[in-house]
Amino acid sequence: MPQRILSISGLRGVIGDGLAPAYLADFSCALGTMFAGGPVVLARDGRSTGLMVKHAVIAGLVASGCRVLDADIASTPTCGVLVQELGAAGGLMITASHNPIEWNGLKPFSSAGSVFDQSLGEQLLDILTRQAFRLAAWNNLGTCETLLDPCAGHLGRVLSLVDVPAIRRRRANVVLDASHGAGSILGPRLLEQLGCEVALLGGLPDGQFEHPPEPLEQNLAGLCAEVKRRGADVGFAQDPDGDRLAIVDDRGRYIGEELTLALCADHILARRKGPVVVNGSTSRTTADIAAKYGCRFYRAYVGEAHVAAKMRAIGAIIGGEGNGGLIEPRVGYVRDSFAAMAYVLDGLASFGRPLSAWVDSLPRYSIVKDKITCPREHVDAACAALAQHFRDAQASEGDGLRLDWSDRWVQVRASNTEPILRVIAEAPDADAARKLCNEALELVKAATDLASGGR
Image (cartoon, rainbow, N blue to C red; front, side, top):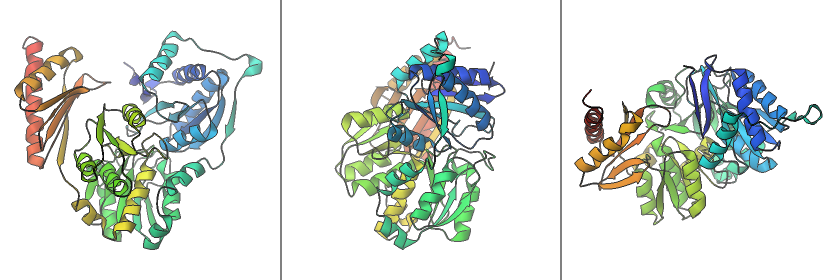
């Protein structure tokens, strides 16, 4: 079977085994049809396969009459900002995010500069499935033009969020691991504008990853060592398309992606009160911070589109996901590693203390993530078994099942792309979190075995 994942969020697949040029052109032609031949912003991360994908995509968009606004290598949040600034009908980001090097993909954007929600995604899939393309005549084909300095508007929006002179006076020593991705275009430029001394790792956007590209602890030993060697104030790690950020403190300690949103919330809410939205799998730390500042706190279903929609609905001033994905509405309703970096540096300048001390002042929990094979038809039985076993917990359904106690929680939810259940548990310490996760895994396995007749 081709290694290709098609969903309402877009397309990912393995080049040469699922993502052939003809299919990429069809997807883009469907998108151009949906946008009625309007202007479309196009950007890509640094993957070596991006040039092939880009030309196939341009063919589909031009064939449907679109005016392609080519930003070439630029981050996912930059693509979202450009859609807004240029009044485009939508956008298309060529990226497979943190997937391995052989993967690439397409992530469409609405005219609001946000990733597709379910309604837009279903509309696109319907056009693609039916091959109901709007093809322009030979004398009405679209065009393609290269954008000059596509990052300028995004840079300006991020700089407007923070006290630039105060950050410049601190002259922070920063190590940035851009993972040979799109973050290497705007990341160093932003940090230099903020007066930082910058050491750049993975700074050539060629997709030749020197470590697995997801910014997890096991992949960032080199960044941690470099922060310690340089005596840096902070280490930042981006994923290849620049929408997620993990952080290493001044002691060379990986503090992870979960605390990226928490640090930003702590800094923002201390200065400006307002509602906060996160997804159902995000650490409780951010909820505790919102409570500390007397701010309303909400959870949305997992997925950037769900969080952004909830933020818009309630007028949230900050939101995001626990995978290092800050969403700052004043920049755009897209996860943004650059806004997160700016807020952390602004916090360091304001507090006048090292990052490690700031981190240690936050409420801390341990979070454990695992998964188990579970056919989709057995998911309801597994969730029912968990709810029955953990009757002392507060149960929340809709996005799988989440069970909450006063100091811990566990969530199980079906994957959209694989026959698995994801199990996430958080507790005050690592042993308690792992124990809760393991208990949930055992219950799911037993329920699945029972539902399948003990096979």
